[in-house]
Length: 94
Image (cartoon, rainbow, N blue to C red):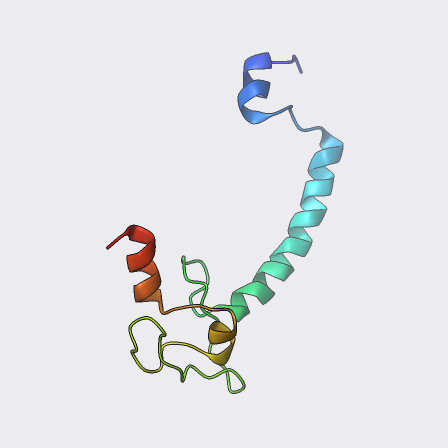
């Protein structure tokens, strides 16, 4: 394949077959890891970082910003989080 300096500038060098195999191996591992990580979050795939509620991590704490009850888990509080609504308002400047 001919080298295209403009494409390389914007997208990096073309992938070799060997690097594609490495990527495929990493993707298989990453899919398993992604599944586990998704189980950690209350809303996987969203912009929320709040942890999923479980028997050992119940959503039973108020938001430290707005005071609404049952918005955070103990892990959320440990990480210094606020509820999604407050986080969105702060991030968007409302």
